[in-house]
Length: 401
Ligand code: EPZ
Image 1: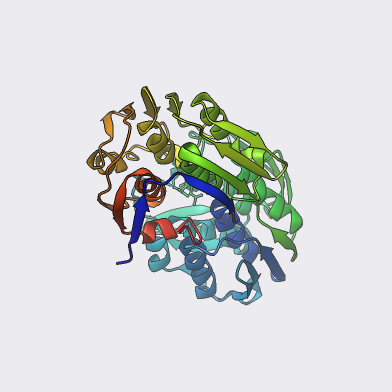
Image 2 (image 1 turned 120 degrees about the vertical axis):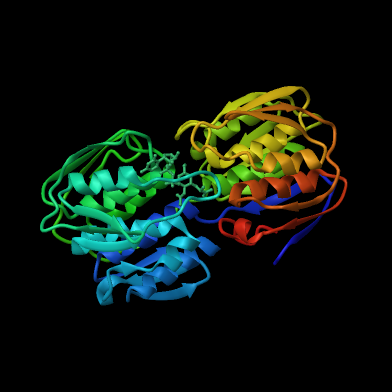
């Protein structure tokens, strides 16, 4: 079991470069198999989740070649198996993107049902509703989702909840269907736009990504391309929150994608300087409190909720953090309280009393983003902390240390 040993108490100063967006990469790597030609993808974060998905892609027979550390080539021409094994889904939920990609290309796919994840039960009812709306027969038995269609015909799909996964899965499943598909109440995250841009680079016809109505006109086939993934908004935001006790320049970012995070740091009294592809966060003296509610993009991202909670736990005054997307995303609070934080969770809101200091402790990462937040807490605590279960953190952060 790997762990981080963190000697904290020193404000962070310096600069860091941000890698490719994990949650864009997972959709893009899956979509790359939808052509029989070679696709070259650059700025792929070399993290556990992307490595597992690439193993799943090889597992069904596609060719995967690592060109450099963050560039891969994929060729879906040799796919021989439309069944994605449970072992990949167990490791990462996002293997379910192969459901939409294989259905969209071969009109058939069988993918093990994802279990819940650490931050809440995670149904895929909206994904399945969308596939059915395109004319696929969908059934679930022995824990496997099977989707099959004589013909995929464009449909009008209204999502009951804003869902990143279903929006990406349905863009893939519909991009070679007959006619037009309209996705209403679609997710608008930067990584949705990135996946749509990638599919369009392969010859798809997708308009409106980034708004809540996405129109996909089916095309006959997709072709190869070269594409570079956008910077990771959440990785950048994580370092921005770590700067709430220091002075950090975060490079290779798109400041526009960070607006909701920047706004909160300004409310907390931090100073921010913005360039066209970098942002500098300076916390002179104490930071103040504020309130946060997580919302779908462009609201404050749920994936930044644990990280801002740590910054607020060390701020002056009281704050409230409300989690409106997932039902179980406060498991890190108990760990923080062991370090001297004063946080009470009632329902989906954490009530935070800022404290001067944390003391170091033996910690364990409950999930990906909470794990990153505990590292920020350990860096702020005097003394040496140990953090176990860091493979969660390694799922989404390349060379985090
Ligand atoms: C993606 O998860 C991200 N994962 C998550 O990031 C992120 O927290 C989440 O989007 C929200 O931004 C990847 O992109 C791989 P959803 P996803 O479908 O797609 C409910 C990280 O830290 N829902 O947008 O699984 C669902 O239960 C990870 O990188 C349904 O009810 O999230 C949740 O409450 C953690 N039915 C809400 O919608 C469905 O069919 C949002 O889920 C689908 C979702």
